[in-house]
Image (cartoon, rainbow, N blue to C red; front, top):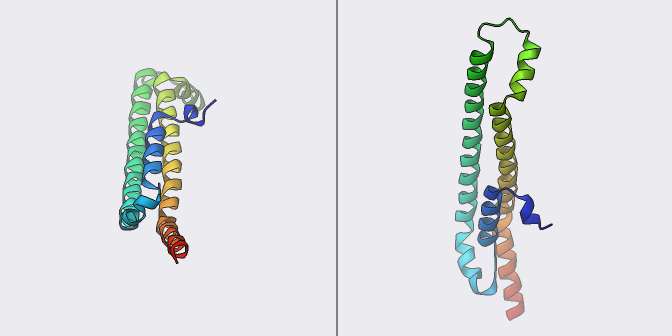
Length: 136
């Protein structure tokens, strides 16, 4: 089984984008030197967008939860424990929890990319130093 088969589609796109952003080769070393700060900012922005999406999903989950409670338990006298069990089994809640879990995975993934981006400038500097040593 290929590692890419295990990644959700959004993570595949982010992974491919990160691979392209952080690829350093002899012919693009000078160009990458100037791009390093922009790459870091780009991934911080992507992280903020993904975190905002998680907040929206959390809000939607609360709305769905309220709608289910109103629909199923408006007239019934059911204890809180049974209500929570019913909510957990509701298809809408299962779908929302899965989406939130997936979004949290994406956020952890992007946080890792941001950590790489923080050291990216040093990586480029080291590559430049190696090229200088090779040429001297």
